[in-house]
Image (tube, rainbow, N blue to C red):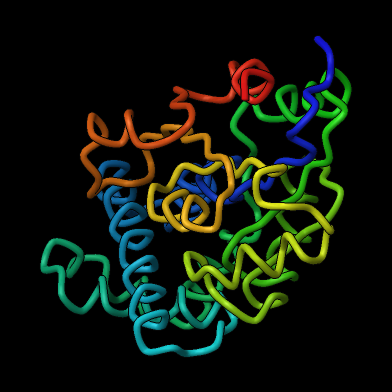
Length: 241
């Protein structure tokens, strides 16, 4: 493949898109919790985390430490969901809660991601960046645990603004000195890609079963420049842009 003349870099959302957060979090839960309950709790926790972020964006609040957001989100889920009452004692223990929070810092990559990123570099000559909500400490820990390598890590805490606010994308673009049309955002979250579209970036949606549980995926398929089930076809999709 030859390098495209226009696209110069790819911004990746991280958790969910590149990383299998569900496996890491479920494995960190107490063994006494049945597997189906642990899985659903993880999914509910992740969903509440997004709701917490959305509220902070609506309130025009600065990005906070993601560990604080996750801790608050877990408390909300446990307090309002009767199905988890049998496990509430264990999960409310401070040491257990801290262990669960730390699980978000240790996540495996989805199996095809490393190869896709390497092909973007080697075959297309593109720069690759993380551009995700969260903290720099979290992203450093996740690159280590996943084995993934990027040219730079941009977190909402570092940029000072959450996605999908337009300023989040513009600050990232300014730092790498590229125009919006020269960069593709790859994400498993439609809200993120919609924000990138508004500033003129190209967009690739990667469908992950763990994320966008409230989206109509059939509608999402027609919204962006490409829709993928996993990243095996990502280099070809980007080359086609």
